[in-house]
Length: 264
Image (spheres, rainbow, N blue to C red):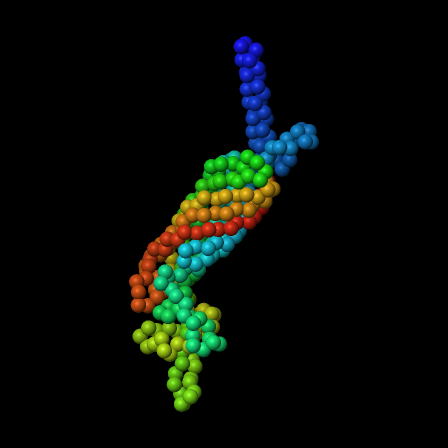
């Protein structure tokens, strides 16, 4: 019995010493690109603690899509902070595209007055919940961020047909106005850049929460899937559609695909 107890204490001491060496090595890695006075191959199975990460990606949400760039700073083994820069397209839940009678015309949304895009800058934190124990494992993190959002409204221009002579029509590109334009007059959507000089800005705030699943095989490469919820709040209702209520709050579920690199 004493021999078993002695062996247990010996194994425990060896394990604690190994953990201490690993933490010392990771601490050295945070301050130096290469640890000094460490023989080659001694810490082959020890992961470096990287200082920074640069990543970007695209996401789909319940009412549109977006792109983002994220700059991450590692605080310690489990905690990170980041700045997130994002562009989103936001749609009204009641947007439905219609196919024009003219096959050459572009599909349009009847009743849509403005297209809404947004630029977001947010600051957030990431906490690792479950580390990547194996080379082909998955690291799971909790992410949240808060910031500002700037809504960008562009008026929608449509191809409007006016009777001219029998069998002939006068086609004009006009900003949609529900008081004068009927569905029978609309041939299709106008040029996408038409009205770009008439942009209007609506500021607000944003928040996001998500779970991040990082699955890259290499320690210095980032490949991740992120899933969560995002909230954009503007200071007033955003006039996207006619004939229905417009919203000031936009709550969406999203899935993001992130790619990037870690740096010492």
